[in-house]
Amino acid sequence: VMNFKSIRFRLTIWYSLALAAGLLLFALATWISLRHSLLKDLRRTLVDRVQASQSFLAAESADPKIDIREELDEYSHGFPHGSYLHVTNPEGTVVFTSAKTFPWPTESLSQSEPYATRWRGLPYLMLSRETPIHGRLWRITVAASLMETEQLLNRLRFLLLTLLPGVIVIAAVGGLWLSRRALRPVNEITRAAQMIGAANLSERLPVPATGDELQWLAETWNSMLARLEESMKRLSRFTADASHELRTPVAVIRTTAELAARRNRTADSYRQALQQIALESERMTTLVEDLLLLARTDLEAIEMPKRVFDLGL
Image (cartoon, rainbow, N blue to C red; front, side, top):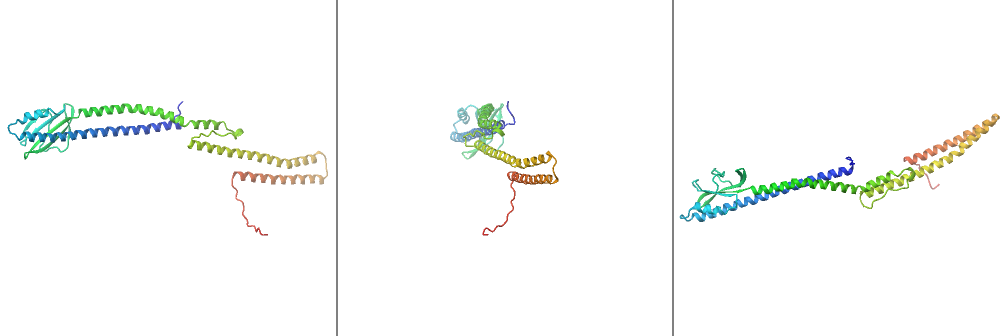
């Protein structure tokens, strides 16, 4: 059962989110870069066609016997499919157009940069420029279809949107497997730590030879267990020593009281017994205070009084 609060699950989620963000940025950058490159190439093509049409028109119009319309019609047939040509003389009369219903520009000013338009539901890129031919300004307008460009971009977008979820899912599964494999030493350390108690403090956690934080964590835990084991041993020795030291005065007090209570005695005998009991009680009180001082010394640092001694005496 997946624990949604576990480090493994959170690592997988963060890894998947980071990967998804990176892939989305990469896909967006790829799509935008390709679109910019395709449109830049198409704009350059339109500029070249305008210049080539200008050269062709200048060469053909030099001979008055040549029919410009027929020559431009033949010339336009060399354009790729979906490309059109529109020529206007200086008087504003249309000399030639390869697509009569196309939305050619009617404004008097030419466009310095290509711009997009639509015709019959399809996208086109159009460039219109006034060019000097034999000292007079002619307007040459060329248009090229953006259909292939949009189809290529749409195909790329479809592939990216289709493949990205699959890649992210595969990466998430791989991340889950990798996190499980990476955290396996943690599980082994946890199980080993659960088996260690006060009765077997000499046991140690397995130290993975990975040279990373897990190895450092296991070594730190083993160092802590060694300190706990030493503290337990000192506590056991302290308890045994305290029991041994307290046993003698307690035994003397008990023996003295039992002897005094066994039969009637004189007042001096009772007085001597009580003095013996008081003396042993004072000794036991001093011993208990010393033991408490030792216990506090183990638990916390005690400030020792400092005095100046003359070692030359």
